[in-house]
Image (tube, rainbow, N blue to C red; front, side, top):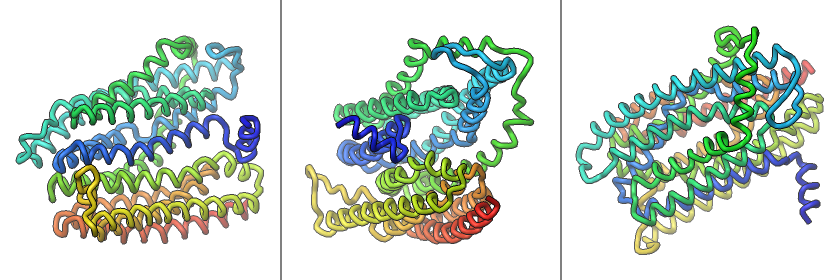
Length: 456
């Protein structure tokens, strides 16, 4: 039976790394749904607002990481192609590539150590200023220590993440995917246990500490430490020049990442400041479900990236388009089904005031109209992400300008409409801009697809 499963998986391009990635996303999506039930049961509406706003402010790390981890993976993979591995901790080959690999490792460790320290102080200050300013009336909410712990673990995670990216570049994608999956399982388990034990806002910070410890334990008590030491000592006369080699790639990716923050992460802080923590909590819980749906359905597309890339390399565009169109149709139908089920469920719970364990869970979500305004963009963003994935499999980035413009417009819309029209104005503005982004992306998709394939 296992042989048949493995054979079938190989035929559709699902190897160990992809399998762990898909399983990880399923766990994350399912865990998000289970977690929100515990949030609604164990936290007050005000605490729920703090809980979800924590995550939006922690996402500031995007401004420090700036897509560098993914670039490190690519550079490491390039140098690794010129090396011959004899076991998991030693290699021989090009002295230039060995030296450049050591240079990359040293750069990675030094660079991320510095920016992780800067991130810690930035998070600590930003969080205290924000919650002290806009949460003055919530003196009974114990958020100070949880925020310190989250600031520490987020900063340490940023320090470690490029090391994982380095290992991926060396070919350990399956191992890294497995470690990340284990982290998610452990963090989810501890969060639920701690919520049950009434740790409230301490639940996620404590779980994050336990989850984070998995990575350094894996590195320092296994062969990975010896591997890093071996590479570190391979430094020679050849070095990677950040300004000339890395930065020209990084700035494009960085702008797209920053744009993503202004598109997706401003909702909760703005609502917390303008409408209060209760409405921010409703937005946070609604987004938790919607993001879980989006993440799960996009797995159908993301797991096909190796196949898409292979077909593009072979210029087999007919087969590429057939597989892509089939995948998009399947995943989009699943997306529509999941959104419909979610909306129907909340509608029924709200209409009949159905209580679960004595609590009305429906009032922890946004009202139906703003919820609908947030659901439509999830469907459109699913297709937008699929088109973007298709184009990026050609090793090109045609979405940068679109990402920047939509990011700027979304931030202006969220802040302005949120201030004067509340959650209705904010969600309506977001939906309209997503429709515009959808049309723009379709134009880019059809134009670039025709241009690139005609060149081939």
